[in-house]
Amino acid sequence: MNTPFKPLIIGQPDAEITKQVTNLFELICSEAGTLKCNLEMLFAEKEEEIVTTEFILKLLNSDPENVIRTTWVSYKEINLPGIDMKKFIASDLLEIPKYDEIIESVVSLKQFLTEAKLFKFNFPMAMLVNEDGYYSLNEEFHNQLHEYGAFYTESEQQNQVLEAVTELKDAINKICNLRLIPVNNLSNLAFKFDRHVLKRNNQKENPFELNPRMFHTTLRNLPKV
Image (cartoon, rainbow, N blue to C red):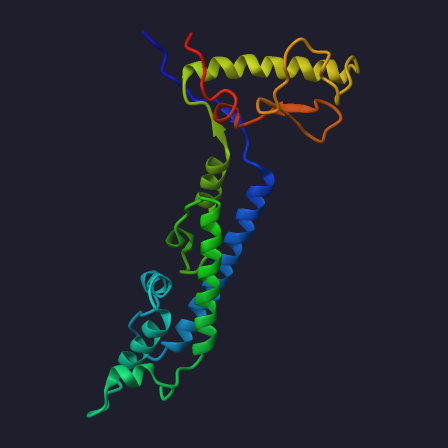
């Protein structure tokens, strides 16, 4: 009976990228919280809940100025017989408290979310809402961020190669730690050193580590065994 394939971790998430993504989502939470507070103050007169996650997403995915203006007119039950309401809603005659602050928050939030897409880490804003209805980083966020940044083997053959490369890495580190070969000159070794498989770090001891992208570069086309 064949043993089920079990992925092995090749490398932990890049600490700098993890920090950048975390900082960016903290900004998203902060700006979303500011936006929610201003919206709740704007629509505080009625008991009905207007400021939901769906409403905030609607602001982000459509024309926020039109959404706020239209919602405000409906909320205030403004009705002007004989007046073109579409033109009135778009005009400067409509005065909405905290309007500029709300639109600025939407613009900033859209910018942060666009930057987040560049990292290709897709974590829905709706999943950042805590029990109190506000935005914060949670355990699920940190778990998914770790999985997003970590690299795993994808086959039993990669597991075997990873084991061999790990042994090679440990042997090279031992030789370097014993000062038998200068760290910056591995030309004396009998094989071609490949930085896409093993890479330098900034440590004096154990100066080489696995390149977590090894199976996406040099070892992407492994020979069949």
